[in-house]
Length: 234
Image (cartoon, rainbow, N blue to C red):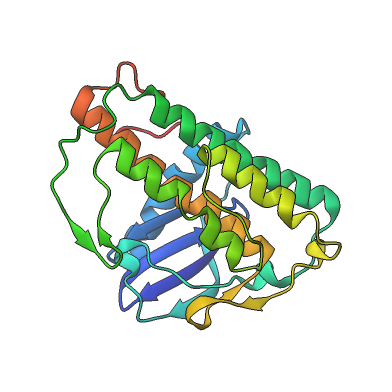
């Protein structure tokens, strides 16, 4: 299985190239690798596909950075995210990104008390880590305008996470050259492309959906929490 390795020292983010948005984290590369098979199994179940991944990991790209990757800070652009898209490929990726938003909203909506959490306060590079379902939902939804702005698409965060994301794609599609997948230098000298934006949406949803689901199970119990992303309880 082809993977991209982004790390700060030993702290690791490991991304699947072929299962877009699937990732693992670990204090070492070996720890992240050990989690990948379970991540791909859950990802495949979420997509309704048979899991056919090879358990052998091939690192096809590496970036050593000074970001706090232990807290999921990232700025890598995959080599595979620099090429143009066909219309069919774009539509397939867009459908997956919108499915992710829809499933995130369903998970959030299933939690009975959206402002209660058993998790302790914790700080990270962007401030306090979201603890409650409400905080996790707002944080995840509100990257919409940021991600789209990095490829020069002006959109807000109004409506549900699905609504504002769908509106972003609609505005993107008004540009005749959007399938060219131009690489653009965005905020903080970070390189972006449409492919990267779609991968980042899937990845960011997955990070906070995992956290929300595990928080809800720990706080309220599994009964009644809609495991839309098919995460294993651990």
